[in-house]
Image 1 (cartoon, rainbow, N blue to C red):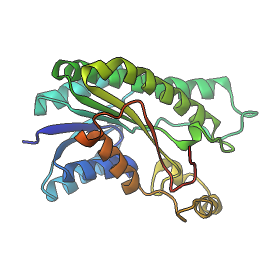
Image 2: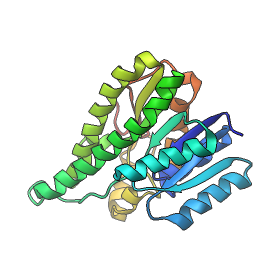
Image 3: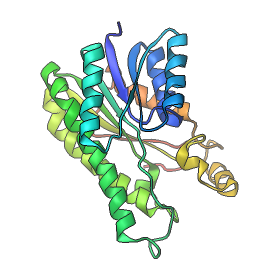
Image 4: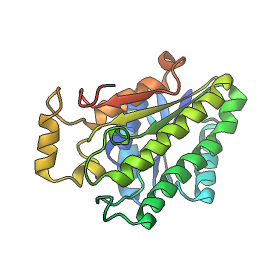
Length: 248
């Protein structure tokens, strides 16, 4: 039985799937959460098990309070503990200019983004506080600090998430819990990256000092560093994973 357990939301593909594989390889038991991608999630879990790791697949819409409660309760029932939350699930968003963006579209993205983060954080914190140990890791984007045309809904929602994490980090630090943001640039083989035209992906890669887009594994390794003991005194941070495209 794994000594440490990590719940990864939106883990059926892309960054979430890569994170599940990376953490499992480091000895974590992993919960592969999905909303409506059961076959893909089971494939990720099967790969983890084939490599000698432990994985549990749990379906849940992380914007649904009852589903989040069930997700965390199922994890605790199976493993008896939850040490790390990686909130990676991406709510849908429109790609459009501000001029064409309705308040309903922007408000929906903000509500879904923050509701999920709020629900998950509230659900996992009691156990972490009891043990005086835990890791909260949230996936954001460089677009929250460096705007790009058409990405206002995503960028604004993730900027709100960034601020939320700093407040949470301040409050939970006395309990031995860290909260950090990992903020990749455009990542290959993800739902967001796949929406971009080939020409734009090529231009973004050319504009990156390291000469390529991020890969899911690049992000997963950064997430794993925050999950472990080596980052135990790092909290409230915003970690870009972008090959030098945005230096702060």
